Image (cartoon, rainbow, N blue to C red; front, side):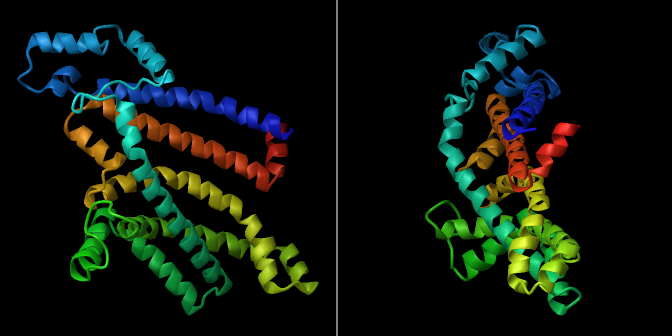
Length: 312
């Protein structure tokens, strides 16, 4: 199967997943115990106000009609209006998505880079002190709760040493600690698979043949071995993306960033369900698209995936 056929097939498989994501996101409002409109308006809301809001959001219609209407609005870029801010949900998200995207990408860059480098070093020095040190640090960072690590870093580097701002987004220096917290928390998920995959590849016959032909060891590792461990790492990157986004929500709150994470937490506390639905839907679709992109990258790195996939 050619590239175009493989891409079309993967896109078609994504459609039911996206539909399922929209359905679950929509039902969040109705999974809430009690009357969601009364929860949004508070305990002192009058029946008249409740009736007006139900009519405004179409909650007086049957559930399937509500879903079809809501989905139609989403396809037109209409995510509803925030009850708390009285602004379109999409505008609120657009004001904050850049901040969250910067934090998420910075954390991913640190985690992938640091995890890959440490994993490679651990594999090349198997059973040495360097291998044990890399394994220990990976287990150490992965065992610490993200919010606790953020608070400790904030106290040491922000309050005591005063190297970085203690809160808010004021410049490049304010990005270092939040991104480092996410990066250290996530790099263990890349270091351990990288070590395992690199050890397996280094024991393959073609690696021994390349070394027997006189190819420099650094070239064998950097070109022959590294290319074959990229697919598992891309898989791990796609799998960890939801956790990175979830971690950025906690980090944003601790470091007082005004991103989507802070908006989501505040909206949950304020029972602003249109904003909660909109943010969760955007995050979920982002994860689905990231997994789709990972599949497409697989096919570029290893064309055998397209061929094998087409035979199934």
